[in-house]
Length: 285
Picture 1: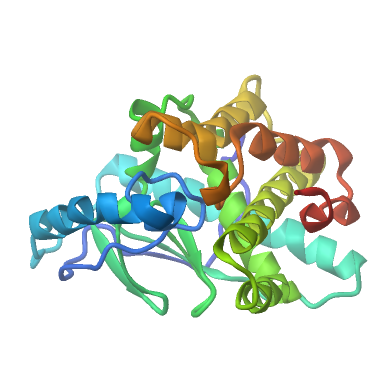
Picture 2: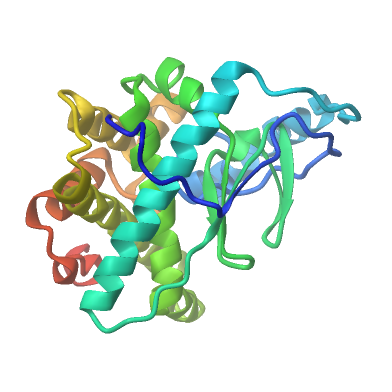
């Protein structure tokens, strides 16, 4: 991905290397990490509770800070550029649709972090907290994505994940997320999960839409970039994760969508470039 030389956002805070306390394992919005209870649901949640408790016991309290490495500094500059790209593109899309855009903040962390949605650790993966309207990212997630879940490495996998989480911020601004939460209060678990799937797939659509517009504006794509995004989307499908971690797939417990669905909706946003074609709620059964 071509990114050097473009504007970098001022809305990022880099907390990597800073000290902190023990954290409660929290839920990641994108749905990659194997320990998230909401991926499994039902009786399977009870099966992984001991794993969560064991993980928490292994967490050590950090009391010292360290200097960032040159690689981490460059990584931070890359994320700042991605964040600026998302800000610029979504400002434009909102203006075209007579909407008011407000940029989110992004925090890079390592180990653990406290948020308005509760405590979270690196196990949570990148996530968006609507309570404080902040995107949280631990960059070690992407090594996990590659080594444990078989996704292609590369910088555009990072771009896809950030754009997906930014998509959840868009849903917060548009009121979509709050409407889904209200609907879920009156639905059973299976129906509630279907709404969660539609919400996640729409964030994938928004990630593809951002890619479409950013390519037109900045000619950022290099050979293999879209394949990196699709590989990441494929790796984080509920069916792929459940098959790998449980040995079986339980569709009623899906909360983020299948690998095929996630790739489809990213591609739909990327190829169409049409903000109005992202109504996943009307098309996802």
